[in-house]
Structure formats: structure tokens, C-alpha cells
View: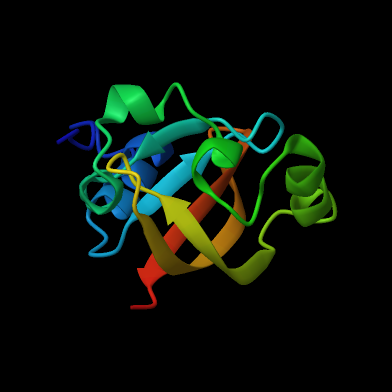
Length: 125
């Protein structure tokens, strides 16, 4: 785990990563423009069975059956401003080929001056 610098100043990237890595629910960090996964916590990796390097080569359309293409991603996210949150249901594709029914809370955040989406999923089964 990354540590906060000893000079007493907080590194917002480190703090933010620690926050979602320690969540007890699956969490995904997503590039708002490309929908590519930038990071995921251990719960997210366990939920779908992919390893982190596999996830980082994917985008939302690869896993989320409610978002089958880039046009759907843009329709879902284009009006979201920093701090906005959208909640919706979806089926996510597991590495095994199974689908997991989830509720997704998607929030628009700013980390180190860069916009990202944080998606937290909750199983609906």
C-alpha cells in the first residue's frame, strides 16, 4: 500500500487510491472519454475473475451489458459534471462467461487535476 509522504502533505492520488482500494465493495476507476478501466480494487477483481492487467486492457463496453457501445457510454455520461452521480442496474460479464447482476453507482471525480469516473458495484443477487 502507498504511504502518505512523511513531510505531512497529503498526496491526493495516494489518498484517493487508498480510499477505493479499501472499499468492501467492487470499485473501478474509469477514463471518462474512452471508458477504459484505469484501475480496480481487489473486490472488483474477485467479482469478475479477471486480473488487473486484463481489466486495464478493457473498457466498459467489454464488461457492462447495459453499455454495449461507445454511443451508449456517451449518452450515459456526457452530461455528468464533477460531483454528479448516476445509479443504474446492469449485468457484468465474468471471465467464466457468467453474468453478475449489479447496481452501479457511477460518480464523476477529479484526481490530480484529471477527471475520472469511480464506479462502485453492489451485487443484486
